[in-house]
Length: 377
Image (cartoon, rainbow, N blue to C red):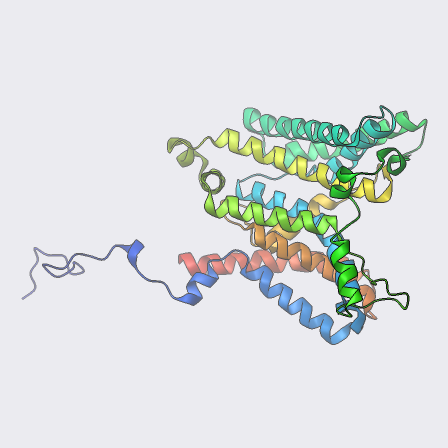
């Protein structure tokens, strides 16, 4: 007979029931739970595609630098966008912020003739304040961040256009930033190439390609790549190893439960909006110093590319899930495809098709993996 006083699924007497949290999971399950899995798999597939179809020069040191330079600028935006998406919000104004921050930075350097370090610091302050304003409007009005930042997309682009015309007497481009910025260690941090001495030594010892004159074909690593890698490492450390990272996941996963647990949700989200604005300001400073000028079209549609790269990297549109390293890989995929197509016989306009296809596939893949891991139907 069955003892009806004891549940059928209960653990035998004298043996404690096993806590679900103590159950061991397989290596495959742990890998599937990683948000960046899809981006890493996509990067492998894209690499194999170009190995089979592209010119061999694409995978030389010079070719890789050509790919990573634009990918790094997008990646800085994508990582910040991923953190904000994990926190449950969007920022569609970061592309326009690049143009507006470029105007602010260029005006400080050319019109007011401020020292470069002061101009850069002031640019970050202005961008941070606008980002904080975005966050406060979203929090206090309860409007979707999609709507608020869409409005600022047009506001900042318009201000950049009007401001440049005012500053230049009618032109939409402000020139002369490179000459007014001068030289020195501050400029070296935000423009040019890093590790030039190392690359010269490598060329002298025949470890990398060089010209007949003995100079290396690649003189160094563009500083935007260095910023990109450092930002990815710091963001990953914050997400996975700090209380702030736990707060970001909690704020995006269940804001009400997070508030009840003592998480300062409003402060976290405001800080994330400020981060995305400052990341756009960083890209503006990097590009303006390299080009020596700024214009009203700078950063056009970068907000959408950054969000797509974040989604490819595993960030969910619903918040509470994502990865900075995933956004890192997503940006590299963008750079590889956008530049890599020029090394093939394919029409470069296929890049637009790729953007839409990768976005759709990434969302479908992420949803599939989440359901498999969590048991959702």
